Amino acid sequence: MAKSALSAKRWLAAREEWEADERLSAAHIAEKYGTTWRAVKGRIHSEKWTRRIHKQLVPIPKPRPPWRPPVFREEFADQLVEYFSKPAFIYAEATADNPKGNGTIIGAKDFPTLTEFACMIGVTRETLHDWATAKSPNGQPRFAAFSYAYKKARDYQETILVKGGLASVFQPAFAIFTAKNIIGWRNEVEVEKPDDDAYPTREELDRIYAKVTAGRKEWNEAAKNRVIPGVVSRVPTSDG
Picture: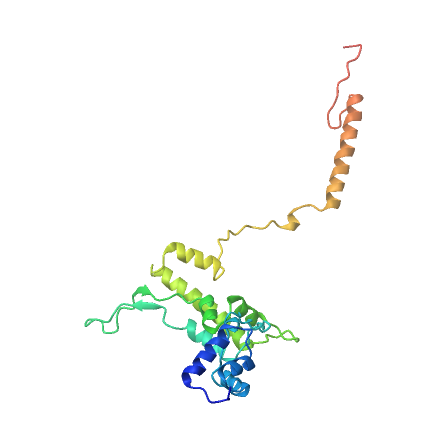
């Protein structure tokens, strides 16, 4: 059979047959359809013929890169202070009689938290704490600006909580929980510690015990002889 160029219809039939049977090679298709195997190879690559077995293959996922700790950036310090220093309350609006308003707090905006800020920059709250407490080999803060910003953020939290609590814009349960678990407040009762000097030492106790023991022996001996120290005893005589 003479080798000749195939029509588009015959190339489509050849492709469908090649893709349907994984056992057929380019030489088999060329022999059956009267063309060269080079022409079939060219069509396979140019038109990207794909067999059924290739379509069923599951792609192997690429291995995940090794975990790396979050990278600290100097701008995090300014971002932290900016986030916590935003206005936290809604004040009474100004009126004709009082253009500046009366300064009364009538509501609260979102309470700023370290957890929310950590999510904003793509880390965790524990990571913020690690950055704030990290030390250099000389004992100084490793990220001094961020360490200061971290402490300032806690002060902002305390100020917002106190002002909101006094203005009754926070629920009491929320205020108490936040004060104890976020800014570290505690219900402490002052207990007066005893003065260590008010108690006798071990040596003094030993001397007191020895003195009492000796006095008890003396008393027992005097009782036997009916002569009690400090007491005039009357021993009956035959004269009455």
